Image 1 (cartoon, rainbow, N blue to C red):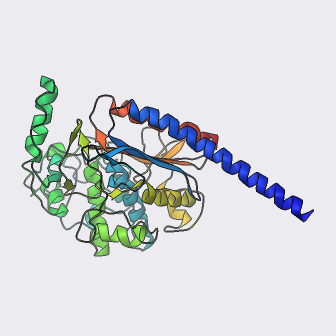
Image 2: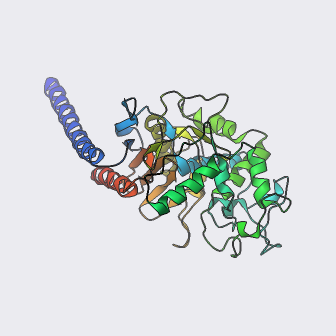
Length: 392
């Protein structure tokens, strides 16, 4: 009888393993076809659950010229998905008693920021986090991109309208100079700032209207620095990356010089390396394997487990907005089906969401943007992964 039970167990294990392999082979076949028929240079994907990576694989090239394949270990920036780490960092600072989301941002800033259309109305950290602060990205925002080398003229074969748009951006990028993030914020939103403009604020009362704001995120990251006495990227490393053993992730710095980094392709052209003056809103570099650890942890937290945050903090961070006109919890997009974030930047398209009902997460990192049908092609990749995630 004992031998029969063991044999039955082995049959079940082998059957499950074969089914999983067949399942994964089907995903790979579909994604290879999408990759080969797209303008995307390279990408990696993952499906995760609350315990582990269910599926992960890279496709195409991390560098087309050198024929370097894009793998699950290839590192690249993930654009605005970086804000999910900011959400966790804010909740951690609140747990530590450093701040409260309901606080006035001017309780912590060394210079005052208020909407000149509503000078007596406070702006709260919570409003920064759910993009209702009335602080908007002004004309100076693109100064945040600082390239290590000049971008060559690559756009002469483009149509006249697109050529002019690209040229204007490239001319600006090639003139950008480095400055501390605190100065970048002050210059735009403090009345004494050199780029201060009433147009950097909306005509809506703070807290009343959703308007996506990268600079609102950067102000939140700066507040974390002010209350913790630590550089934001070090705060994230201490309280998120190290506990999750995300050893291949971070923002470019003296302590993080990643190898195996993908080239980024903008309008199909390989771009020189660049960094962002701002780091609350984007610029976080990681790979599919490392970021899967983060999303798995987030799924666990949403389902009531204490880990790098308490379950109570997760509930607050990922609470569904009271109105469909509002789209964010604490820097996390939340709707009836999924929770996560997407990103789009120079040479980057990214998605990271988990399904509320199924508890399965989907991650996509792409090293290509602004090519013909790029967004549609990434959408098709997402839909393919979604189809298999919903089956589990």
